[in-house]
Length: 482
Ligand code: FRU
Image 1 (cartoon, rainbow, N blue to C red):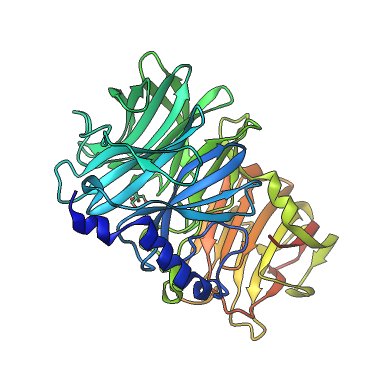
Image 2 (cartoon, rainbow, N blue to C red):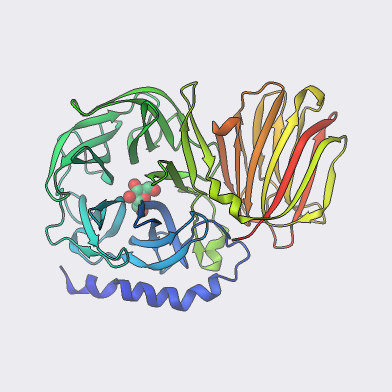
């Protein structure tokens, strides 16, 4: 290990930077209230999601020194309830030669008889191979020791390529399993490994690979049982299916193969990538994604920070074979002031004078039998002069739900859309948190996550309708506070 690298990055240096910069960053009005963010600087993928000694831990790809990507550290927060998060010291800094040029890339966490073990990719562009799998352990869940025998997987297998990253580890019966994202012959791959002790790994085979629509490289693969099936999630590159996908299928531990069935895009918004899952002691499978994406405009970079995670979403296998992603129950504990309207017929746009807030939960049910309008819905973060608004609507002609952020404020634009399956009624469950909107519909089959950057005083809520009238069977709005 070169002395310079050790001096360049360390947990201490990262913490000094955070202590100096985070008070100023905290003042930005686009900071979210109940979502995970870095204290300062840049974050991307959620890593190491785990419930350890009863508390939820989220680690994340982190560069504290700038609000753009740089050599990766692992940031760290924990929570008792998935909605109120406490910052902990940076868990990993790139100090070793196997991570010298790139850092500690994405990975996962397991509880190995009380020892919290992080499994991550060491990335060094100057080395061949550039990506290797490594581990670090902790007994207090705060300070981590990198294993002296790293890397535990020093090169990709024959079925992989130098793109060989993002290990997700889990236990099945008495063995550890790891899936690693890779690419070969223009197909994304999830490569399967097996181990008795997390240190010696045996390559099994290709667990799953792309069909014609699933891209040429898979980042951040994760596989877990759900109901009678298994679900594989991944963030494929250059894929027709979208930037993230879930695949429902069957796992065979004898052959080490996952047989694919139904699959689809995981989130229809602009800002969702690299989701990862955890299993908690209530038996829930929960996913959290990065609520941004490569290439997105991030106007908060000027304020010294960028990136947030989604709210935690519980996965459920539905009878039609699709997966529902639903906001975790604990979010209800954030609810404050409540407004309820029922059987509301709206014939022209109507500003709700009583509600002005940038942190809201809304549950909306529309009665389509009593609706003649072609488009209708709610607008959030509306400015008084009418120049800013974020529109969450239903287009009854195309049977789509959409989030229109063409007037959402600074820099970001574009409409995200998804087809919805409904008859009679359609409901939307919406979470607004300063600079984010997450919309759940069709019983969780469809989710849209979008970042928005309105002015601080754009706080209005408006019901809107065009060409006809809309009937709200019910509309519930809560102020949220962490
Ligand atoms: C996904 C990703 C991972 C990689 C990490 C680097 O967003 O590209 O594949 O480990 O980000 O920060």
